[in-house]
Image (cartoon, rainbow, N blue to C red; front, side, top):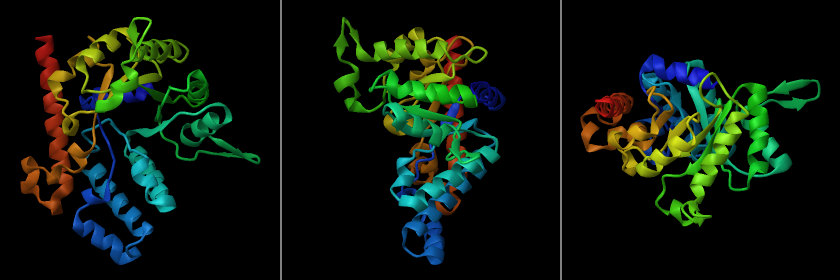
Length: 310
C-alpha cells in the first residue's frame, strides 16, 4: 500500500491528504435541510448530512489528491449511523482510487490491539468466512503503551500489505508536556522516532517502510531532526493551514527525492467556503471552494519545495 500511496502522489504531483473531519457546523444549511427532511433531526439525519457533504467534496477533489484521512471521532459522535457513514466514506474514496488513512489513533495491548488492527486494517474470521470491517489502507497508532500496542498492527499490515502512521510528535500545543520530556539527554519524541525506524525495518516497501510517522507541521525544526532519524519512514504531517503550518515550514519533512512526506489539511479544505478567501463561492458551491483550496495548497507546497531546491 505504501507503493500505491507513492504512485498516487507522483501521479497527482500533490503530496497532500484531505482530512475528512466533518463537524455538523461545517455542513452547509442546504445539505443539512435535505438530510433532515428525509431522516429528521436525528442521528441518522446527521450521518446522512455528513455523508453527502463528504461525497460532494470527494467528487470535487479526487482528481487532484492522492489520499484522504477521515477522523473517526467526527463520525463516532453520531453513534452507529455515524460509523455507517464512516464506512460508506471509506468505501467511496477507495472506489475513486484514493488511498484512505483512517485517523483512529488506536493504542492498546494484546488481544485488544489485535482486535483494533483487524477491525480497521484486516479481516475478521466468522465461521468459515472472513470479512473486512472498516478496511482502511492505513491507520494512525498511538505508541505510548509500547511495542505491545504496535506490533499487532504491524502483523496485520504484513498480512494485508497495509500500513500505519505512528504518533511521534503531534501538532497540538500541549504535546510537549510529555513528548518533549528529556530522557537520557534526548527528548522522548526522538526515542519514539528511533523505534519507528526500527519497526519499519521489519516491514519495508521498495524504498519506504509501511510504518510511517506523524509529525506536526507546527514543529518544523523537530521535523528536520526526525527526518534524519527516520529516513525510510513516510511522515504524515498534520497542522497545515488552520493550525498555522505553511509550505515553507514543511520542506525539511521531505527527502531529497521529493518524497517521504504527505501533508494534511482538514477544515482548511473541507470548510474552505467559510473562509474570507473563498467566500465568493458561497455555501451552495462549498465543494468548488474546497477544490480551489486544494489547488492553492498544492501550489504553496510545490513552490516551497522548488525554492528549497533552488
